[in-house]
Image (cartoon, rainbow, N blue to C red):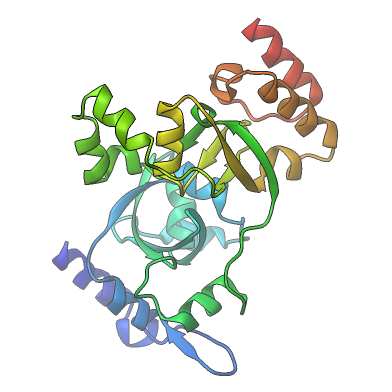
Amino acid sequence: MKNLLTEWRKFLKEENWRDTSWADDDHKVTIGDVDDYLGEKTIEVGVQELLKQIPELELEPHRIAKASLEFPIIVVRSGGQYRSVLDGNHRLAKAALEGNETIKARILDLDKPDIPEHWKELFRAEEEEYVPKGDHMQIPAKYLASHMGEYRTEPFWINFRKKTDEEKLAWAEQVDLSEPVEVTVFKDGQFMHGDGHHRVRAATILKKEIPIIITRNDVRDKNKDPNIWEEWLRLVQAGNHPADLNPDKYNIKSVEDVGLLAAKKR
């Protein structure tokens, strides 16, 4: 990986690339600063997962065609959500066009305690402390799914699977479930979370509902008819698991789509 990143920097003509910057009246951060901070660790991130969370950009087709997927992209994450691509939008677009499931990425997590405060301000494009905004509600924890892959990859959860049911229950009873979990509702109606993994798993074990805040809602915001989201939410709140209603993950575009999915489940 070290050799790959070395070649990547040469490919990007490092002396110019590292000067790419973001600034306000008081601070300036360069891509070189971010590069030095992140080091050499990369992970594989789902391409569709990124596309669902990151705003669409108009990109030049010829630059997409020339993009090399050998080199990792740099992605900003906060509040358990992917927010933007600092470097590699054309590579991400190319990966999507080629039908790749994952892409190499380095993650700039703004929630880490060692992140400089002015980085948080610049990359969140806001001066105040991050406060999630959205619709609050209660939902059965078992209806939530993680889009971060944490349950599969983090050592804590790998070891957790080895515990007995009694040990898991004892652990779950000690977890504070009062703080809302940030949730994204994707176009297919699935309720996905990027933070709160302990709360969600504990509440699932305890067979409880959990408070959530929907910070992004593609079913509502990507469709002009507000009735689509209202009908979908009504079905979910009536006791239907979103994944059972839409196992094939079709994008929900009309009230008729909701009705058809409900009829199939019956």
